[in-house]
Length: 411
Image 1 (spheres, rainbow, N blue to C red):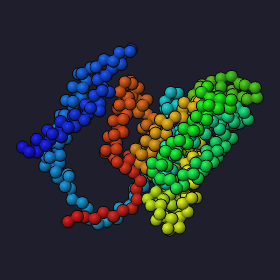
Image 2: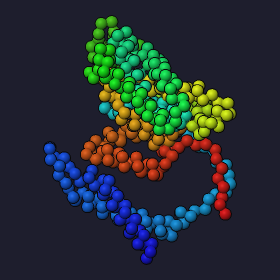
Image 3: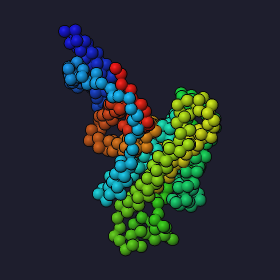
Image 4: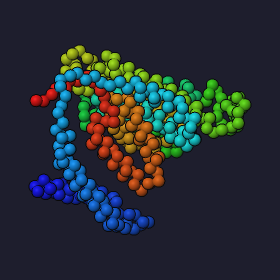
């Protein structure tokens, strides 16, 4: 009887907290300039959570639940980290087949997913491997995008020339950010990087004579060896469909952008995976775990931190160039703090330090909002709820970083 009373108490407490947090969001509806309250929604929420908590508590207290909870631990043995090689091979094969099956809209979504994979991999180096909390990573994304737009506007810079230039400029700014924050950790580092991201956004927004301010700048689409993907040829350029004697199709440009971006993602995935096993990657992880101990072992914390900031920023800059080439237009509203928070959520939920986890999380974060468009009123609520469930179910991320460890039986 005492157990059942405890279950009722927990169910009541859980229901009260849920109504307190979710009740106003679900019950209050804005109709024009008036706010209406629909109490039935709160009642349904309370009933579902109350009985759901009772069911979960009953399962936990049952014989099966107790046996599962008190499951004996294995003997002492060394467990090696699992290999994700087959997952990577499946990702590459599906990546080459998928664009042939998608229409133009979903192909654009796939390109955005690849861009977020690049951003996640770049921030994963800084946060996941080096342990440096960066809340202004969107600044490097913006630097890459604007380097292409500004270069094309003032210096007639093409897409292929903008790729290395955008990466180098973003890497340079990453090193410049790294110098002042070498001695900072945790919350202080987060505040400084957040300020850096806002400074870049405000410069782009207020320096109207150069950056176009809120009106933004246009960026030319990528070309295939000088062949444009426009319907009609422009002076000095031949169109792609005329050169190959094909009927015009706007999908060609997206297919080409997808192919180049997918190859870049595969190469960077390989680079990050190899770096984890190299001395530089081990040095990043050592600094993340204990900076004092790593410095006592001879690791140069200055070059190690700067390399993490610079390399992560370079990958973010490459993503920015691809974003500008995809959209054909850039303005400061695309590079707000919300984007930084989204990229950080991709790294944390995917698994800090896990390239495969970041890849899967970036795909999910891009696809889920599109798939939930029919539930536009509750899309962010469902999105946030799924994030909470993932962090409860997999606190180390969807695919956590694996290392060799020892398990010991308790007798």
